[in-house]
Image 1 (cartoon, rainbow, N blue to C red):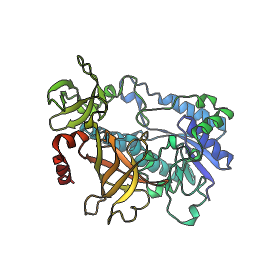
Image 2 (cartoon, rainbow, N blue to C red; image 1 turned 90 degrees about the horizontal axis):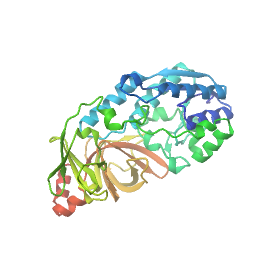
Image 3 (cartoon, helix red, strand yellow; image 1 turned 135 degrees about the vertical axis):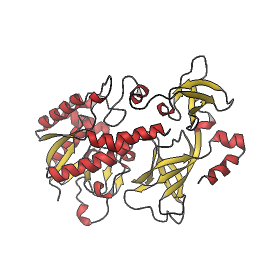
Image 4 (cartoon, rainbow, N blue to C red; image 1 turned 180 degrees about the vertical axis):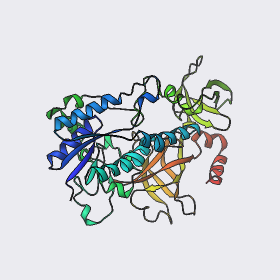
Length: 395
């Protein structure tokens, strides 16, 4: 039976209300603030970790629950940040938030709380649900846990949890997953946390935050500039220069002086250190309907019949994107479960390095890193299908 719960307190409204709800349900609650970033390690930092820690402590004092601060800076640096830098240097666009949850928050941090704080479970303010129930009341049945979409579909954060292990999910609680964000704010305001209800939601990289000088200036503190050319995909002419392909992602607008039309990144040539560009945010080169992935991670088990047939699942590779139906099958007849995905709709800027999360009904099954993207609409029109054959050869 779950009696004592550690709540990851971030200083935001969702984690505060999570702790409040658990306390009202009769659980013995302890608030734990996890420090994952050292602002002094960078120049011109605006990431006020001290302020967040103070807010987290204040939340616990107002709730009259114990507060503890733990340091996981080393773990975040080694398991998340260094991997992120390596991916950027390889021309990929990683999602460190997903790695942060799977490698730190729901691995080392959760284990620390369970082993050292005498708790039975760890709760966070994520908008998601556990099939074990709000209070993990169904855990005793011995069934495997499933990660489910939240009630508030507009705040669905299951993609960020899609690399969780079965072991971690069995001990994870998501108190706000069964209510809407609007209700969370109302509960906060009515409970003396009006300041948090009005607080702007944090954006940017997990535990690092949004940078005042922009991501490009932040990342160049860790990855040296490597200037190269920007090539127009249609004319093949050089239309500008860049300071490093790691500073850009597909679909992003790049401002080039002297050009009246808006320019967007539609590709990268890592070997030549070139950015491939197009004119207009809806250029055909930005849209494709297929991709392959690296080995998939399934929270429960691989979907039935996946290895022998193709399945119709839903997927997304950004949390703001709506779920899209797709035909999914194993792309290699080997032990590693790499996937081939054909989307029912063309998607804009499917990006290598990002995670594609897969869904069946309300359940988030897991996710996989996008490896290669199929031919764009521009490729298909330009090459009359020859690029499709090339894509097939690369599977």
